[in-house]
Length: 408
Image 1 (cartoon, rainbow, N blue to C red):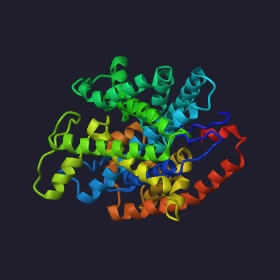
Image 2: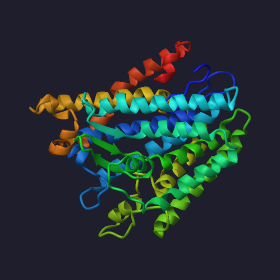
Image 3: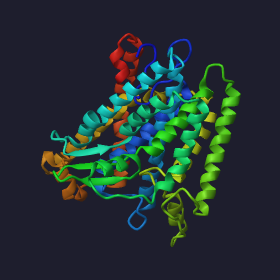
């Protein structure tokens, strides 16, 4: 996630005097979006492709597990930063009603993007028989929810965010398994479900939205720290201590297997697998432990990153400035590469058209390359797409009058 302000998928940050980037946020966003590419390359090229779960301790290896685990930071950071940007964008609007309308329309746009543009990128299925509701969907729905929350006092918004993030695991025992409208509403809200419809189509409810709405609401409140009149030193201190408290809270809650996580960790046959068990928290929907584990370190990073600007950070920041554009094109690019690789191996070109029939067949589970090769492909994808992202960012800066760019 426009006139003066642009809200895209992860909304650029703005200041009082026109559009002004906050480098630390672009840097963090750039880091996690590069990590996201790693996970998607693994999905398309790794051994077992879409059918392998690297978090199953009985079948995983430490390198495979950590390849998946490090990418857990991506979605929470995207959603949280979108909340921050929503607040700062709202400071440029003349009324709360205008802010609400802006968030609502952007949320609807992102839901459309997920269902039509991104879904096709994942599947290449022109019949749209396999629907996947993922992070853009979650951000879009969260923006729509936030468009209503902005009418409330900030203390109430903060309270709702805390209740949803800290309290949603109380709903874990509520489970349904049907395909009625009521069941689907619950899947959207709080239950990860791979649903096969009577028609044969498939809907994968990956990102149930309740905890994500809460996280965006908390990000919205953290946006107050980035107002131009807020003291930077105080902001860094708040970010640091909040991040430390979240991280320590995760360690304590997880160590004693306390509230906030369906998966109980336990000692394994080796120390490294005990660590894997400890870190193996639930993402769908994101448990309290999962969110503390990811957002805590992200806040600590933000507290130290405001003065980081060097040769290494600059190209990473470029990705962070065009996240929506990069998100969409990288999925198409990876999918095309995987299709070409299938043909190179002598398989049919349409084997990677992931229809409902194809995903249920399990045939792609017999395809894939080693984890080492996955990392090589990941680096190649990032390097190839970097000039394109840089050119697009430069084009956006040269043409602020083109309002359609705010949608990309």
